[in-house]
Length: 120
Length: 388
Image (cartoon, rainbow over all chains, first blue to last red; front, top):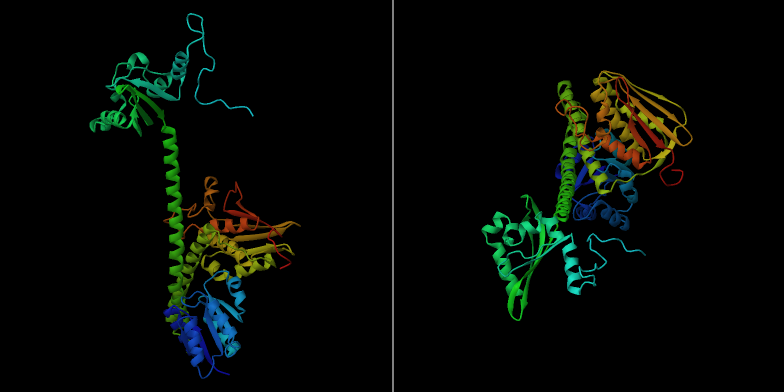
């Protein structure tokens, strides 16, 4: 199983911080600036990521649109998705996306690493 | 259907003339005009001097007929309008166009001003100007109502703009704050460890970040409440369990405030509520208690009936004066002076909105000799849905 995490997040500082934390804890990490960028990265990848960390509110293609496209593509449909969101009632926003886990932004390092270990 | 009496008081019955015979049509019309009280109706000679006067004119302008007949109509105009020659201009326009209508300030006998709607009609017979008919209505009250409506609309717009600004500001603040917290946590949780002195500093920075997030979230809640996008997601749970979890999260905070928090509860306090929001209510009350009543014990008592549950949170701090007991639930309000305590004054406002959205009530117990005591009553099954 791959040990690479795809981080889909439009804010460069949040994306970079997540990538650093993920790498410091022994995983590989790729960054995408929005849903469309994430689909491009997935199409080019030689090895698919073990999990996708997905922000909900993004320009160009948001989290829900990305998730819909991902589920429709048999190559990527099985990659588990962990939703990251600043919404307080994030369960309600994330439920339609059928994510394996939902983390409130910013997640604590401990909960993030625990989720990654469960899927990678 | 019966007709309602008009504001205009007129005599409905023609009175006999001095000779005892019924009055002529002209006499009756003259009687009607002179008795109208809501409109000043009078005639001017071709130069603008007043020739007739009715009850409405006396009531509106304050002059009796004896005082005003023979005077020029410019007497009713303000010094500003006189300076620009308005009376003459209006008469000239009435001659040219047949009539002129204008709204503006006019002056009463006692010097006070009223907002008038004025119609001046030129009376022409066989091509010769005979004079003018002038009808004036006092619209001051209507003007004041319009001004009041305008002020209200401006105030509502200002509040809307403020709420919109708060919403945008809060959203914009949330993202860099998340990035900051992630960076700090990333440093704090480095797998190779952190030097103890740095760790203490990072922990303090993280706590500051958490406080900022709490403040920003409160602003976001307010904007959700005011825009009506405040939704509840009800599930079935035991209130005692939720309260104990919040208290557990506050253990370190309570220790820093030198306060103890105890929970006394009856068993079986299940209900159907939005857990996150109910935890937020308890969080907001507890935050207040540990801020304003630091160093005193805080007690949370939970009890229930078949229909509802009651949460009572008491502290032994300075309490809230009787006069402030409603105000503390308003937006951006607090009982304590702002310079002594931080915060936005939103915690109790948000708490009340959440409790009321659940069909419940939150209040401060009146007349406590010491400390504040909040009482929350929550119906067990107000929110729609299944067993959750």
